[in-house]
Image (cartoon, rainbow over all chains, first blue to last red; front, top):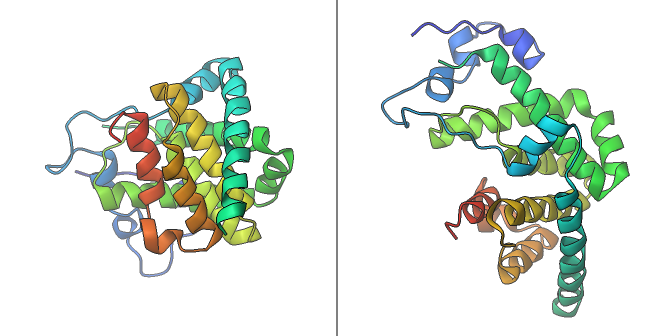
Length: 85
Length: 142
């Protein structure tokens, strides 16, 4: 399969001398296109929060609420850590 | 077939989401990431692609868990500030809680923090181990 990628535009850096485009893009066929080793159907791997931000432009109230819970959890962990070290 | 321009746009959007996560943890993180944006934007993209190559993952779009993980590692490398690694754990923990309705097991987090503090996390968990733990938890696999 032929892949056409503008390497310099994609990675924002020039191709090194004596490097073929195919080598430089890390065999992207395996990554972006189907191959015998990988599932036929690509997976959507984004979190629910990322989907929310993409739709609404800012983090959700739920995320902020959970951050409050996580802060408390990590304060406890730091206390535990200081007694362990 | 994935359109590469769609993937590039998706990476930009995902990276911006991740900057917001770090900004909520600490505004200074967001500013510091912005100072190093030219470097980390490309490095994290390469890290994510290398992960896909190493694990033969066929992606439809970029995973914010992965971008959080690699961005924290790169910012830690650049600034030598471990707070990025600890912020990464908290952000991933929040994402897991939202996606699976459960925080990651506290003892598991505690062990990871210990290894980060002792700079032994790479030998303990390998290149992608910490990311894999959180991703597995988000899918109820751990």
